[in-house]
Image (tube, rainbow, N blue to C red):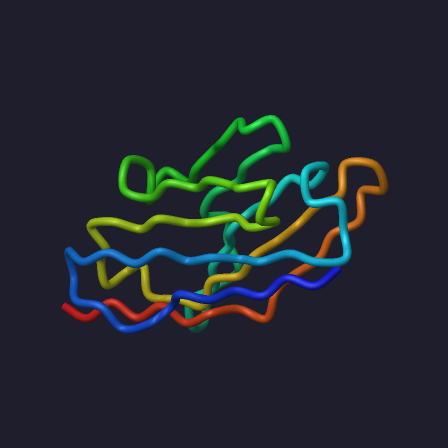
Length: 116
């Protein structure tokens, strides 16, 4: 399974970014897809997750500002990030969990930097 993230960058506080994660080598529709992030000196944490059926859950710190979605026809999951804050600065990683095998995969990460 290969996961390739894109869409990171530098943005001012209050701005928006949309991350994309393109998957290959798997039947995309049977994977739970997630976005995680890791800030310097901190542990990797879940940001948002979407099941194969479209059910979503979010970290409390991003609820109401971030939206995760998926397009099974394009094998892609998105993370729309609005009202960004400096504390959102981190490397954002895409994750896939295969519902049949339980196996997980990670992307290489994309840097998001929010300036104050």
